[in-house]
Length: 77
Image 1 (cartoon, one colour):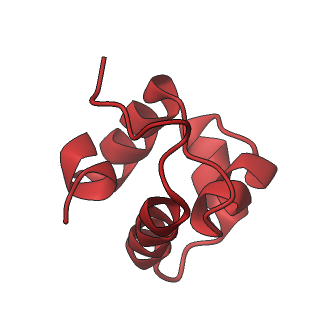
Image 2: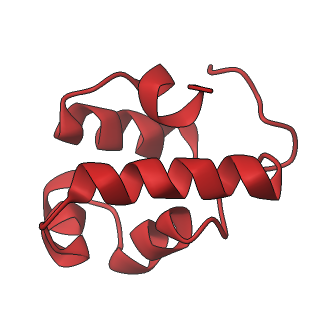
């Protein structure tokens, strides 16, 4: 569906995405974001810390929740 970042993206790509996700979350808790996106807190933590790259469905949920595009979170330089 979205351009692939290789096998879960490079470590640097995952770290950049994690930083963007943390910036978007701001003062909200992971629990709050998890509740509204129907993702687990553990998954959000993994994405924010750069351990994992979300699957496409999770990317869309996060972008929708934050009111931004998938590209701006996951594919921006």
